[in-house]
Each structure stands twice: as C-alpha cells, then as structure tokens.
Length: 226
Figure 1: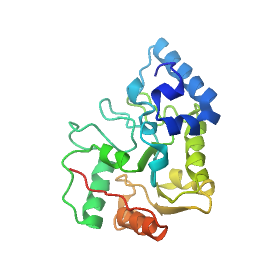
Figure 2 (figure 1 turned 90 degrees about the horizontal axis):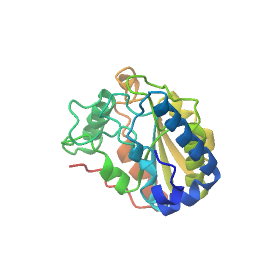
Figure 3 (figure 1 turned 30 degrees about the horizontal axis):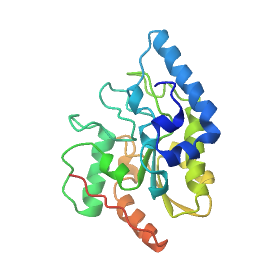
C-alpha cells in the first residue's frame, strides 16, 4: 500500500468520509511497509487493500461485513468474501453464500466467485480488518484497521439514507450498536462450514435486504451474478 493521499486511491465520497481516519490510514500504511521490511508479506496486494472504498460512497445501500481477508495466497481481492474469477475451488464460506443465493433468489449458481458486480451496484463488501499475513488468519486483528472500518460504517450511517446491514456471525453482530435507527440489520450465523447449518442456510439475506430497501423507498439490489 503506497503513501499516496487518500483522494488519489479511493473514491471521492469515501475520501471525505474517511477524513477522520486519515491519520490512521497513514499509520496502517506504515505498519504494512514495516511488515515488508521485516520480511513479512500481506494480503491482499497493496493496490487492493482499500479496494472496497473505490466504489461510490453515496450509492451504498447494503453493507455486508466480513472479518478479515482470506489468508490463502491468490484469494483475497479487497472485497469481503469475493475472490478473483479464476479461483477454484471456491472458499467454503463463499460456496455456502452461493448455496443460499440460489435457494433464496432462484438464480443459477454463479460461474465465478467474483462479487465485483455487487460492489458496482451498491453493496459494500467490507472486512473489519483489511489485511492479513498469508496462511495466518486474524494475524492483523487489533493492529489498527478496526478504527478505519468503523469510521467507514459511521459515515455510511450518518448519511441518513436507506441502508441495510447484513451481519453474518458474532463478530459482525458486535457492530449493531453503531448502526442507529436509520439502518436495519439482518443477522444470522456466519456462512462458514462451522456455523452455516445453524441458521445461515434459510436466512434469505438477499431477498430480505431488498424487501427492507423497498419499504424504505430505495431501489432494490440486482443480486444476479454471471
């Protein structure tokens, strides 16, 4: 991750929204450069660390919160749960998300694990922690990213525009007090194989999110993936 100004690496609206965390973003850049200097790699690749903030801030209508990036090299792309189109097999959490997608919406199973179309249509795919050491899950938790991503969530809520937060798992659910009265939350267990059968399957997050958006007078999300 380079030391360039925020407004050169994220979308204009996000640059303003993240202004209160600008010093923290810079500090995280220093942390990552120190990791490299110490012989440690990090995921995703530097240009993708802030990728979730390259889509229009004002268009976000659904927030899907992940924990931290996939630790498998080649998987993390800067959007929670998403992978590059060529990744096979899919991470098991993403495979379970697609099982629920098919059951909930009746669409055919997506041909790749690339969730970029969702991000382009107003779905914020945000990990609480934006980097990880390869092969070591949760290795960058508590290093400072949480202050940045919580700033982002507070900024979304402060717009006072229709917003549905999809909170999968206990870690994501701890964000609920930050959401305020104008944001509706859909909570369920995480799509991980360890918990998906305990209430993620059958939770209908995609159709429920659209129902809630329409009740708030907002356009539904086009969830279809190629």
